[in-house]
Image 1 (tube, rainbow, N blue to C red):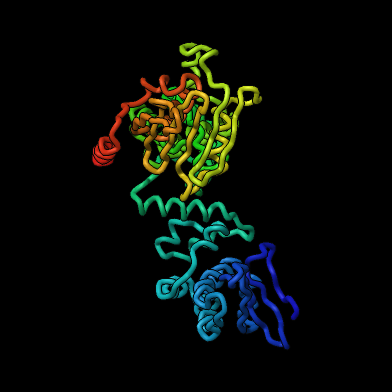
Image 2 (cartoon, helix red, strand yellow; image 1 turned 45 degrees about the horizontal axis):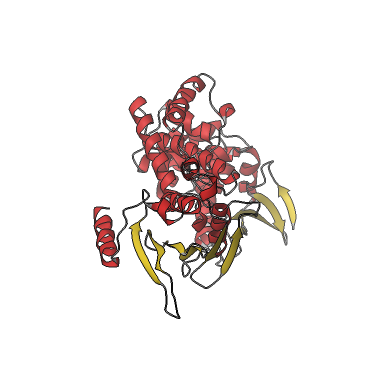
Length: 420
């Protein structure tokens, strides 16, 4: 195989000579391993002459052949007859006839856009006129931007200048699922002050809010409810201060705030929650536990002693992170010396506290008092654990509505679930 003609851009089809025959060779579609497939079909000397001299016709032929390559799938053959049938109408016909041919066939707009074609003219079917601005080098982001805008338009989202600038600032213009970042250099300098005013609105709205850790979601897991609270707060503030913004622009700002808060949470050690730390003075250092036992629903146990370098709460939540699973959602903290403990039911957002009502004597079993309470997500659990570590079951009185009957708990749970 000899290469007869090629352009600087590696994706534009090449002309090769194989066994004495001229062929057009292009990479398109994908095989079963998601690698590009290579296709060839025969061309004539007259076609080669146009391909050499006319970049626009060369690119138009490429865009017309791409759908045939896609139709071949991962292992099918290119419909060479259909490909050859495109040569004369695209390479040798008058411009008006080329435009008419493109109204009859399937063609790929992406390659033309990336090589500088006029998008408005392409959409009106004036393909030859649109290709007057074509370049041999490509800009893939131009195509990505076009399809991103088209997807937004299908959802009724038409971006204004500030909307687009905010999406550029967060790096989410092309891909909404991209983790947002702060990219001031990507924004038109004339629009940057407006962008920063929107960002300042969001920062002021969520000042003091935080996203806590959630060991149930892994070592780096964070609280989904905290995310939702911060997202709702930022959304409301930004919409109130900047009502002209479209949904995508508002969403990218709240996504940025929540993502940054999540990063801060993951960089912190798994220690006591700030909300619980304020209770330390109430119980006093002497009231804190000196020895605790952690267990899970599978019988795994871990001991914590006050002499350990880390707090009991930190070690307990690390224990949860190591062992939590879909079939392992009940965890217990027990103070054997005091005869009390709490059992966390993660599957039901509830907790039980257990205290010894009467110690067993003369071979009799001890009697226990069990009380139940609903819990408001992982933040509620972290408050309960911190309060128990510092003040035992007595320290839990203000952290729940405690019921002695499991049936009352179930009724309360149903009411909560019905209320949404």
